[in-house]
Image 1 (cartoon, rainbow, N blue to C red):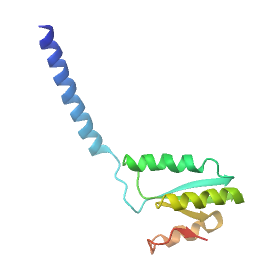
Image 2 (image 1 turned 90 degrees about the vertical axis):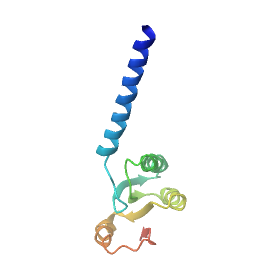
Image 3 (image 1 turned 90 degrees about the horizontal axis):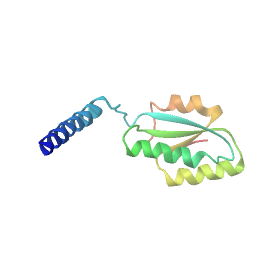
Image 4 (image 1 turned 30 degrees about the vertical axis):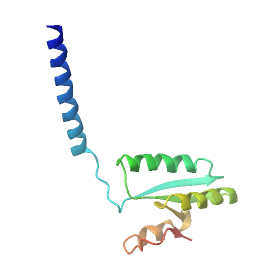
Length: 119
């Protein structure tokens, strides 16, 4: 009797889990490759790697997609150096200066995929 109850409970839990996963796939946001996420950076850029890794984790889980653009809002020389290393490591990360941000956004329509830095 107890074994029957346990099996019924596990079967119901399994069905609920399958339905939950299917519903999650249906309702999950679908982000295309043309999506751009802005990340503002200033100072020595000590938090940049953590932000980029977090965004990468979201990309791996398919919760987001597209490119991450680091917007320079006053990076020091050390911060620019860190940012350059991160640009080499992660091909989906790009760089843009704050005062050139509108130009970057305007250029997105005719974007060349080989460009990853707007100077």
